[in-house]
Image 1 (cartoon, rainbow, N blue to C red):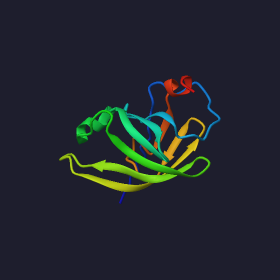
Image 2: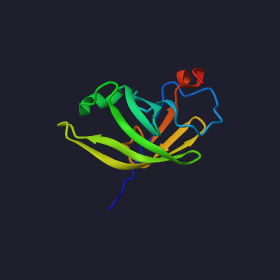
Image 3: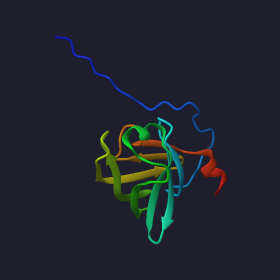
Image 4: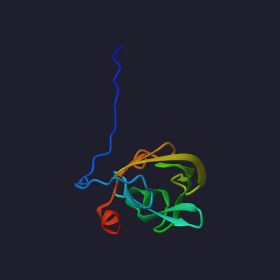
Length: 127
C-alpha cells in the first residue's frame, strides 16, 4: 500500500517587501486567493470586512460584509468569531483566535486562504 500526503500552502503573487513591528490587528490583510479583510475598531470590538472578495464570491459573500468580530485578549492575540458560508449561502459563525506577528496574520477558525494572511502595503502606508 502506498500512501501519499499533500500539503497546501498559500503562495502570494506579490509577497510583502516591508517589515512591520506591530502586533496590531487594525488594517488590511490579504489571503492567498486575493481576498482582503480590513479590520477596524468599532467601540471596543474589532470588525473585519471583506473589502476584496477573491475566491469568497463563490460562497455568496459580498464586498464590505462583516466576516470577523474579535476583542483583544493580550498583545498580538484576539479572540472572536469568523463567518463561514456554504456554496448554497448558508452562514454559520465559528470561534476564532487570531495571532498577529508583525506583518503576518494567523488564525484558528478560517479556511485555508485566511488562516495565514499578510498585511497589505496599503495598510502599512496608512499608519
